[in-house]
Amino acid sequence: MEIITSTKYKLAIKGGSPLRTELFPAYNNIGEEEKAAVMRVLDTGNLSQFLGAWHKDFYGGPTVQAFEKAWATAFDVKHAITVNSNTSGLFAAIGACNIQPGDEVIVSPYTMSASALAPIIYGAVPVFADIDEDNFGLNPASVEAKITPRTKAILVVHIFGNPAKMDEIMAIAKKHNLYVIEDCAQAPLATYKGKLVGSIGDIGVFSLNYHKHIHTGEGGVITTNNDKLAEKLHLIRNHGENIVEPTGVKDLTNTFGYNFRMTEIEAAIGIEQLKKLPFLLEERLQNAKFFNENLGKIAGIIPAIVENGSKHVYYVQPFKFKKEIIGIDRNTFINAVKAEIPSAVLREDTPLIGMGYVRPLYLAPIYQQRAASCSFNCEKYKGVVDYSKGICPVAEKMHYEELFSHEYMRGNMTTKDLQDVVDAFYKVAENIDELR
Ligand SMILES: *Cc1c(COP(=O)(O)O)cnc(C)c1O
Image (cartoon, rainbow, N blue to C red; front, side, top):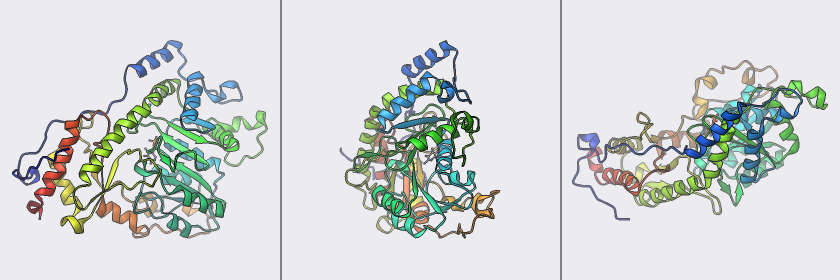
């Protein structure tokens, strides 16, 4: 692809004309298939068939069960259990692993807030390990350093769609007899050395919220190959306290239920979305490749590093920004790029490019003020957990200095749209003296 040089233009942030003002296309993957599927459910009048009692409908209606079957096949797992969000799915996963007050769970600081919050719901303590410089998931050495006699599980996040270092993490878990829960919200059909994420640890959790690769508005799916965990996940999803007597379930630890049930309508949309996922992914991966090749030619901008034999599915596309090579800081550079290109239809107020991702989670008020009724304040908790600034230096460096991410690799982008994004970066890189 020819690089269009634009040295003759003044940067938009310095008062020049922006490279493009026309909004980028919306990412909308909902079509006639989903509409027809929803109408079929509406025609039955049966929008959810779940019953919170021991009955065949304890497992949900026909569409929920059909979606679960399709998901289990596509993701190569024995059990797929739908829920109303990934957040609920993570809560259920922590519950199913019998995590209790006094226990610790090792979590990543660089993820959506729900991934670290789940242990708190069961009175346990999230302990933050640092992230890996290459893939921004948990760093195995840091995980190992955080293990104590109270550690019960490792909650891994395949952040941005790039699989975490699962071989090392599974080996640590085995050595210390820990559960591994994979937060796969951003990584549907990502593979680690040929294995689908969500099938490597004890439990995987996927999201079907509006922002994700495929969606049902809100929704989630839990995956496991373990029958015992699957049984408990079903109990936690749907009023388990009512089921333990008729079924004779013996282990009552955390065996009380929430209502985390998915409706028939969402499941009907989910079935259609799942069919589209391979195609949507292919398009996204092609676009990401184009950006990796072209933006990667700018000295000091470094594309994602993917392990041999693994597949990154680019929920967002991360790059590292080396200030010492480029000569100005990341925020000045990215602000200049943002001034050259607009956002997208449906997302007009949301920039599709960001400096860093989310603030390392331990810096949030809930951790800083230790605002929980049990967890780190629980009398059963015999450890000391640190949430000070500086505990995860790599996460902090990535967030405040080196990482930027964008969403322009989403589907529906034309070749010209992609080229305009690349041109904006080149315009800034070539006119960098204006920013010094
Ligand atoms: C989106 C997301 C969640 C939460 O998903 P919901 O379905 O909205 O609850 C959790 N973890 C990660 C990494 C996410 O990206």
